[in-house]
Length: 107
Image (cartoon, rainbow, N blue to C red; front, side, top):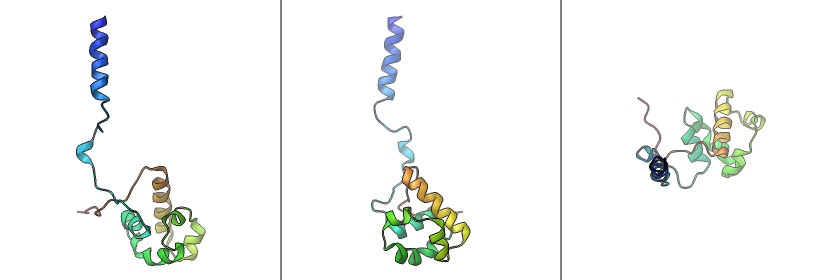
């Protein structure tokens, strides 16, 4: 009984050593994220509105993250792009998504 517990505890200590489980899949992320980098990370044509949004929010990513759909609509951004911007902004706020250093290659 004690031997089974000792081997189980040893496995937990080795597994919980603090190393990430998928470290070999680590992707390089942007160190400093601005409005343009954020929109480039979203992709799907949203980066075409970078100049408009940069001017509207003053280059401040925090203001872009707090922007609502009506303000984006007044800037002339299409519905699909507004939806993408707002959904990725929510994911970024929650820490579930970050823009990559290099854009993904679409094949």
